[in-house]
Length: 101
Image 1 (cartoon, one colour):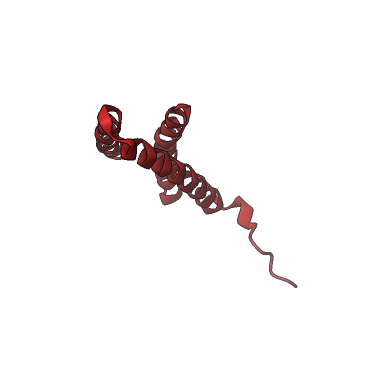
Image 2: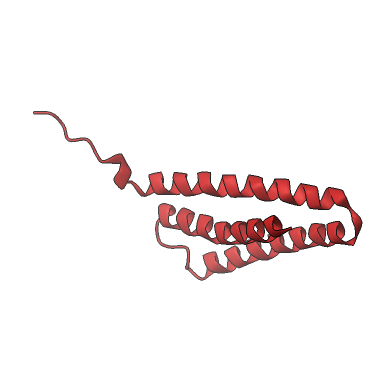
């Protein structure tokens, strides 16, 4: 009798991997858009550089609070998925804002 194979699409790690890939695409777009804005210089470029640093610190601190409060889930897969979702919201908002010009 043949051994039944586990459905790999049912694994939460497949979804986590896909979300990590999507986050990477958005992040690379944000890096490019921010690089252009900062390279233009002036007050707008300086403000973007300061905003970038502040947002990274705030996002990391908020994730730490979520972790300490137990809001990332009970399994490694749920913690990974919620971490990616946390950063994806931030990165997507930056991509939309920067794409407007």
